[in-house]
Image 1 (cartoon, helix red, strand yellow):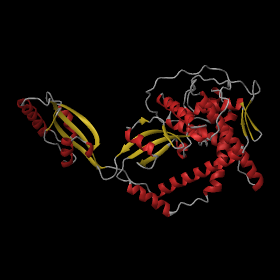
Image 2 (cartoon, one colour):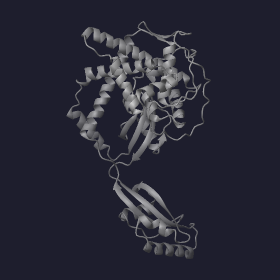
Image 3 (spheres, one colour):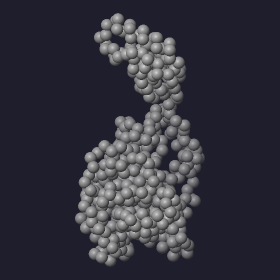
Amino acid sequence: MMRARNVTGLSARGAAMAIALATTAIPSVLWAQEAPPAATAPVETAAPAAPVQPAGINESVAAVVNDDIISTYDLAQRMRLLIATSGVQPTAQNLPQFQREALVGLVDERLQLQELRRVERDQKMEIIATDDEVTEELADMAKGNNMSLEQFLGNLKAQGIGEETLRQEVRANTSWQRWIRGRYGSRLRIGDDQVKAVQQRLAAAASKPQYQISEVFIDANRVGGMDTAMTGAGQLITQMQQGAPFPAVARQFSAAATAAAGGDAGWITAGEMAPEVDAALEQMRPGQLSRPIQVKDGVYIIYLRDKRAGAGGMMVSLKQAAVGLPQTADPSAVAAANAKLVALRAQVTGCGDLEAQAAKVPGVVAGDLGEAEIKDLAPAFREAAEGLEAGQLSQPIRTSAGLHLLAVCAKRASGGEGQSKEQIENRLFGQQLSMIARRYMRDLRNSATIETK
């Protein structure tokens, strides 16, 4: 799987630059992805298609990075690669975002390779990946997509993407990560005190809700401001609602440390994220994609994969058999319904046959109520669920909707297992190494001469 880029903060001035880029639907087959959230937004109209000009024909300068030229052909090729690997379909609205991200990535790679050549020269060591090592990476990517290397490269070619475009990106990413991990990774030490601090914080928050999330973070400073970040986030959400895979979008657009893992942040506890994200998570349901969430330094897109109550509560799985009765039903109707449910209760052995037995009784409707935390149930159901064990049935319960026979199918303590020491160490290590890499790139950018045309 290709490693995620460090997306950085260069505003692509000259957004009206005419880049000849074919924007018909490009199949996203370069990476195997998990299913996206369901489409809920209207489909945008795709930008008109135009052929990509080969190198040397109407080619001009898109940017100059310390005298290293990025051509408009390089930029158009990178945009094609970004479109294909993100699964986002190009439209007239999001082409400027693709252009910005492609240019930012190319500028970063030029800076990284320039720095690595300097280090190689000064320290007499080899860091930059060789052609054979790049080919090895490409073969791994092809294998991950159940293709041979020849098929993989042929697929690129069919989409108008030159092999050298991907080779350049893989060479820069592989070499840079090797350098960062080699230079700083061996020096990083996650102390027991750091691990204990995290364990104590998690223990203190154990009673709070927990969320399994995937994230995309767009750094406002890297993309030219908060307005640009918000607009870009909105466009990405629309594309994901239309089918673009969240992991692919995260790998290509997210500035978070989780980008390389497709945005997978695992289980988090309320209070770990920014307050704005916590507030959004409280209102979301599993399987839901958030709106753009603005925080101090950028914008989050959150996909809530699952949610569970904090430790200390009790979860219960329920089924019911019910007879519908209005609140104003006369006593004889209530008595008749009660008799039906009492007779049914005597025939039912548990959750396994409740629905089948209820189907034999006229006027009785049975169904699965799913799992819920006991404290969130309606008062009458909560009282019954608290007093029953798994496999037991309640007596008929009167509500404003009718009479209900409640079956407890399972009970369990809410909350999940805590993170292991190793998991905490790995997470802290990844966060610190990512922070070091971002600072390194910031310093390279600040000392560089970067001109966009």
